[in-house]
Image (cartoon, rainbow, N blue to C red; front, side, top):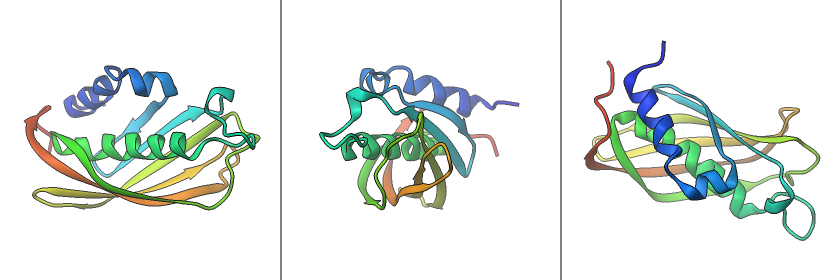
Length: 141
């Protein structure tokens, strides 16, 4: 059963024109994990025919941030690192899986992995988010 905070986090993404432009979808978000995807669209490709690194970074930051929002407060990105291991090509979708590493009083750290339709690991990294005072919803225990 979907919790209130899960609904709030999913609805939050629908308010962003940038996330809408990239076609990022939040497929699942829980207390310690999130999964999302974006299509492999020509509009997001670099001159070599693979997905542009900026689009991949945006996917990772969006899904990682959605997981960080599960604390119940709005978050903002402090830093992020994404290691580009293989080009994103020849796939219908690009997936991002985010896993909670640490939820502190002020900082939330998330690991991310990006893969293609076949499950091939394309990118990995981590993001750190700052938990603001703005309450989105009370998280369920």
